[in-house]
Length: 396
Image (cartoon, rainbow, N blue to C red; front, side, top):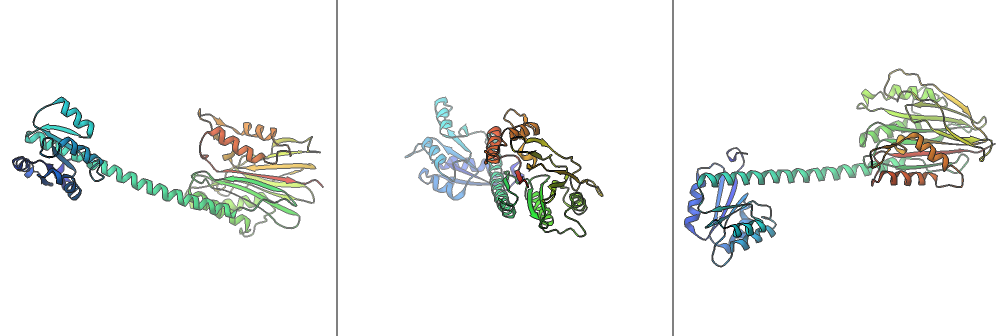
């Protein structure tokens, strides 16, 4: 860094000898952008420094009434000068005094009166280092403010997303869920509603990326689904719903974001569950003639995520549910958990965990699952939104 090309650099010399002050002033006089100040009264050193706010302090060590080393200590506890580079000036080269000066916070040591070239070089060096530190500190402060603002915005967005989620319900079709947004808010959204007296719709979607942008797209897509806002769309046909969503939410129109989604429609009178899967993790079904005979398995097939491929036809699948049936629909944030050793908890391990804990006696299964992945990750927050729906279909 060259002082000639920067803003003025303020240098403060504290020395009781006027001749030293004049000598140092003359050494620096022809250096552009140097704002030189001289303080001959050591008692006024701190007030003067507070007033002129120097980038470099030149401090004499031998003065009447007050020890220069004591002043070095005072500079370092004074808020205005605690980080200011300090070059101490001594009448002789003394290793003991030098060590003491450095231990109290001095940055450099010169025997006065120093050579002009050496003095100028050291003033330039310390002024440049101090200015760089100030710039770094300012950048860190601005970053901290920006991070806090972003964290506040994400927290507000997370509260908004949660406010849109439907409450758990106990009848006629029990639905429970667990939703914990990640620190960056990853764009999960889900809902369920009656299409008519006989058909119950369920969906869960997960937008790519993190942050407010992903959350806003998730909210937009969720509102379109919950409000049946797709024109000329039969919401009882899952494949048609995904196809129309794909038409509306192409990624080039959504800042290159897309989303995975599982959408299903259950017909109570026939116990038929129709569903379509756009790039989403396969849900799990636990079903059988009775609870004791129920088996758990993934079901369905997956396809491209919504927004990736224009004019894509998403197939509608269906299955008839057994007298005892329960499904779990979830985002990948419930099983893509990084362990401290770098390995990932995977889908199969997650399915095994859910299988072993799926007894109705464990009403807090999803809560136990969340605590399990939190413990496994050893992190204060998860890297992705944790979203899981549990839907129970009562027997006839």
